[in-house]
Length: 208
Image (cartoon, rainbow, N blue to C red; front, side, top):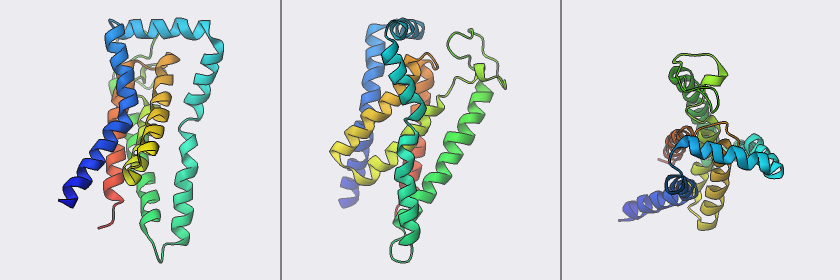
């Protein structure tokens, strides 16, 4: 019974943490007819509102880095307390390993293999392309932010923390679309990969 409740709480916080981004996608679905319309709208909006565009650039450039100090803290305190409590060190090391495997290696391989053009770079795919203009899918920023936020959400299962990290992660993901650097489908794929990374970190860092 306790295991069932624990699993339910974990899934509830996962869905709640993903909800802000899902609401953004729902808004796209009901208000736009295609990805091209979404990108055209936000391209015009960002050109008309340079202050918002500047803020979006700050978010997209520094959003992922904002969570690094948290994991550095887990690593440092985990090393200091490794003789009495190995959970923090294990959490930090698993995070590093999974993020390298998924957000770096897997994402880079998929970008090259798929060869999807970024917004404004054409419509034809170039599989196995080494050109950055054809590395649109999946969104690496989105994968990385959810790979970093979800382990914290699933570790603590605190309502305010879940909502806060969910909104923050969705803001980082949305900035990629707002700046016309990714298609919505790229961001969606990034979220799915980030979810895999987040759950892997949560599961592999749990105490036996």
